[in-house]
Image: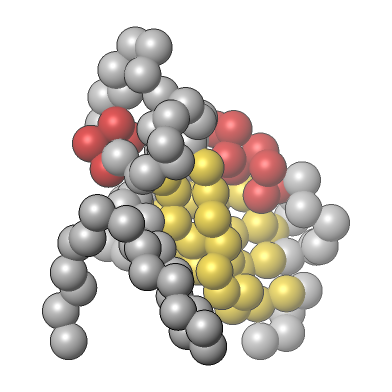
Length: 110
């Protein structure tokens, strides 16, 4: 099955869907009070998104591994992949946001 772009999402009783977010797929790690953001290809992004790393480091667990996506959203809350590389002045509605969609490890437990 291939995704199809549409102008508006459908709403049908009994159906649940998830909107596609265009961003950088990352694994977020917290160990010993420090956080690290790493792409699926192993590229380090912690310094590029220090505010997100600080948020991960502030989580209340000793250690965490999260499967995440980093995205920037416009005024209509549509993710804009190209804005992660260079954000237009005045056009961005959100700072980079880290969305966790899978908790891989928490305090040493799968």
